[in-house]
Image (cartoon, rainbow, N blue to C red; front, side):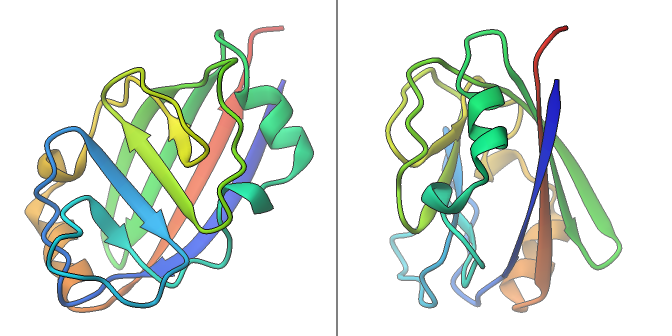
Length: 142
């Protein structure tokens, strides 16, 4: 079982990508200096806008989430897990977490990348405001 979602967003001059436990993509167009986890703004949808099939697959404890962050020539693969506790109902945000904490914005837990571990090449492109494509594939066994 598998489903894919593609999110379009862009960087922002205030992207710092310094958060040690999460990273976030949001529909909001602006970013404050306190948004240390936000790497993409002006996204075309938030968690609540995901397709039902994608949500149905991801919202299980055995679900896996493969996320590709693509910005110009830089591509980063992020591997996370789903959770039966996910609601995916936040209207504007997606958050990938190192921890197992879940709220309406959580799209992945136990992520192997967070803002602070993203490659500097990606962060620099995002600081320049470059567009980014976020491809998320949720899967479950059999």
